[in-house]
Length: 409
Image (tube, rainbow, N blue to C red; front, top):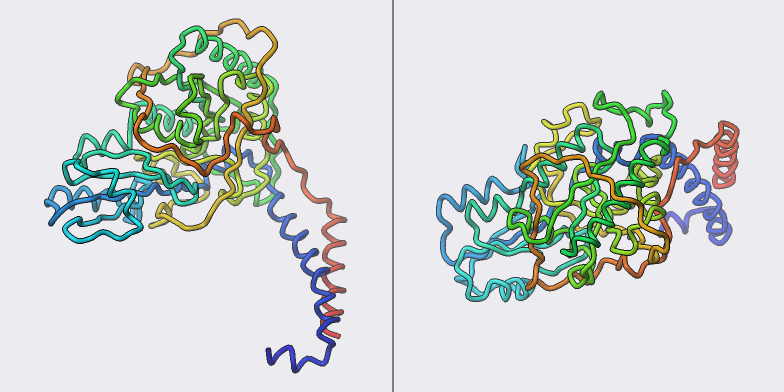
């Protein structure tokens, strides 16, 4: 207040000049943000730490030594933790907080201790995603599974994305969807071009696998107990997905980040291309939360798996946060009118990869994420975005100089 009052310049005149300065600063910031020719899938693998899922252990009285040790191991704020899991405890010997009322209701009459899991805060979905005993077998099935291990294996080897297909249970419908997906991915492997790399610092990548376009498919059924937690994470990402009897296709990339799915009739070459172009295109925004998708819960030592990555996982980097993201849907698209592509056999997957997964039936459906099945048939941003010309940069610099002079008058 005193600064404004002591100024020799008219207050109204000063405020009229701020919009021009703000606009120029925005242009400058944009030039920095978009000047990156690293493909989205590689930038995500090297830089984007997974968001932490929320877990609450409900117990009555002191936890056993084994439970305490398990709890300490699972906390994502522990240095070197492989879990993206923010976990806390609630002792039901005392009256729980009102904020935990819905979670307490979820474990009513269940033997304690019980673990209740929710999506990361960023997803703005507060429904219970998973619940079970806080014992070694249950916790292990929650944070790791054969399918997630296979996803990690393929992605750190340099694949652009793994397209996780959750079967509908209708063999004919599922096989047709897979054939369409396989045919288009084979076409994209030959035709999709990556952004042209430069020697600019922002285009630098780690000394990992060579940049290439490579896709694969991982089919998961809905009845395999080993993948119950993974399927729940995927199909509860939108409120209507658990009610659908269609095959669902989730492109997974980076450090197990999934785009919202292509659904049933929306599994078309056009929509597959839209998702693939986004993943292989230039990273138009390096801020993870402003990009589409959601992270999966996992057990992965990323610093050991990809030691060549440009960004390391700092201690506490996987802890929960209150920052709210923009969760952008990948459109499911209209019903396909053309004849589906002939069936193409999917490359064989390791024998340990599951075939079936159960569909959650009791947990409430999420309410915050937009529905892919009703989204407009728009595709994600496609790249690459071009770098600003030198002349434009010089003009911006001159404009900033003159605005600075005006503000000093």
